[in-house]
Image (cartoon, rainbow, N blue to C red; front, side, top):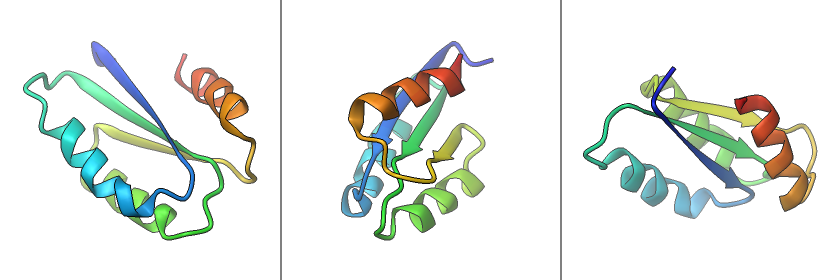
Length: 82
């Protein structure tokens, strides 16, 4: 298990995912896992996140089947993580 887990929510953020991923990946600290919960986005987010997860073992993506809103997404993220 990594020392640090970074949790990120995403809903229709396809245009921001590259910048977010690059920013987190560029950190000097390497013992981390990035967990992204996608809240049933209907844009290109799923394809982008799938490609990140396939290319980097430090990235785990959880795709929700339907949009649950921010507070429920956070709860889902915490359940999946711990």
